[in-house]
Length: 398
Ligand SMILES: *Cc1c(COP(=O)(O)O)cnc(C)c1O
Image 1 (tube, rainbow, N blue to C red):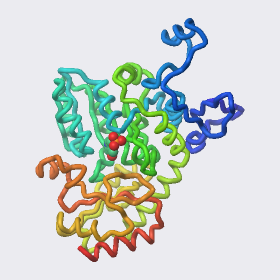
Image 2: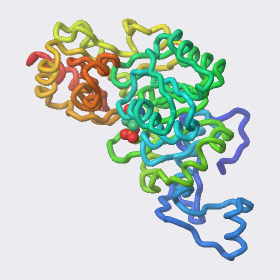
Image 3: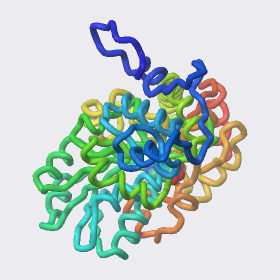
């Protein structure tokens, strides 16, 4: 923001993640301040009036604006290449607000069926309660998107890579179908993180994140963010958030803001380690199927090469012996911890069928590719040799 500009070219993305959005107070602090305040005081009633009318810049009330939250929003928007961003209390608040902001009774949404469990709830159960019809499609099948379109289709929604199957959807192609249909495309970009994929550049209208995952990256705070053009945010998101209040706490914004500074370092290292782990486990007798977006044997490696600049910090492994085999494997792990979170500095493993996806019927799970033997491994910042040793010894127990 206040950086002097005697530059002939724009700053690189990593540099912007360290500097952009900084609002220095009169004390000139080096590190961004935590403005843990609900509100602000005004020098006069006239100034207060002007601020409420939007005629004078400044902050009003932390439900809709706070300096630390604004720093986080501006920094992530700069990195994502978005004109505008709004932070939310959680990733699910971001997903829900982005979709609710775009839709009203009588509208129709088309979404990929391989979704994070709570996203699928919002699309397939919550929105229909308010008169929004929902169609779930196999997101990898472009014809299925085309066929699902109705005159009242207003939104397309997808995750790629999808949780937990790491299935890939051709974002550029789906964005084209959405545009032809007059629908807005919202992409949940959590799994690739802002580092490896930029859906807005691929034609999406809006990107949402759970900042809880790679952006925090150390398992501390919940958070979410909605990124889009200024016009999109003003038209669809701003008033809904301001009036309904799923706000990010300034404390969480401060943690997440500082986390952005190290995001590329962490995600790049975690991805490199995940690739090493994937190569070490591929072809293991107890793993009939290994899915890793950084390997040439990923079923959609061609799309990955087009739309992602790196692999993933996550692996999906099918463990021999179904649920019993997967449980024996998880229980035998010593270093890798059983947890439903992801993107953490600590390597974490989860059995989706009995956790994140347990509320669905067996049929719905099969539909989403969540088999009984599937486990999702989120690779952390440990040394790859220690992880491979732990995973290999646990596989011997299967
Ligand atoms: C975790 C997650 C969310 C929800 O984020 P919260 O911060 O837990 O609310 C949404 N989408 C995906 C793909 C996720 O992994």
